[in-house]
Image (cartoon, rainbow, N blue to C red; front, side):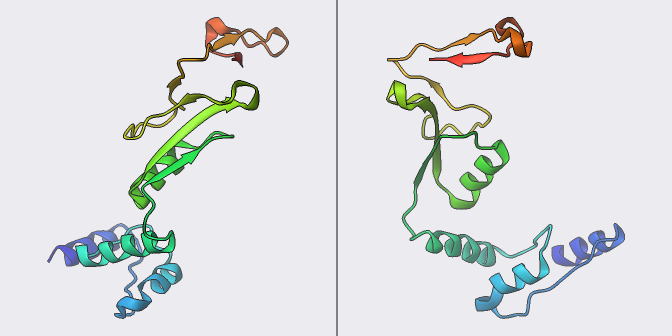
Amino acid sequence: MMEEVCHWTLLMYGARVGFYSGSIPRLTEDIQALKPTAIMAVPRILNRLFSGIQKQLGGNVSLMVTGSAPLSEEVLQTCRLALGSSIIEGYGQTECTAMATVSWPGDWTGGHCGGVGPCCNIKLADVPELNYYAKDGRGEVVL
């Protein structure tokens, strides 16, 4: 019944509705062909999708570490949810022995790269030629 109500609601708003071929082994192909913006499925299907993603990564990934460039909050959250793993994000440079800041496993918030390590000092410096001033929350990060 829920499926029918969802279909009618989507159609009422002008959406298109597609159905998979009925072959569970071809589900990924069907999803790639349909390019859905919404998926309605029983838990068995979602479990299969999740295990398929995990299998493509070897089946053991529980932690990922990233750095070197900013990772968008959307990508961070999607990876955490889709892969079911913790992602640690760090920031630093070679001269400070890599990571000056690092997020902690289990921190599911985004938009930051964690707290400052105990061996580092960080400050925001003014860059007058770019009109960046620390008092305004803009400037050059100095380690």
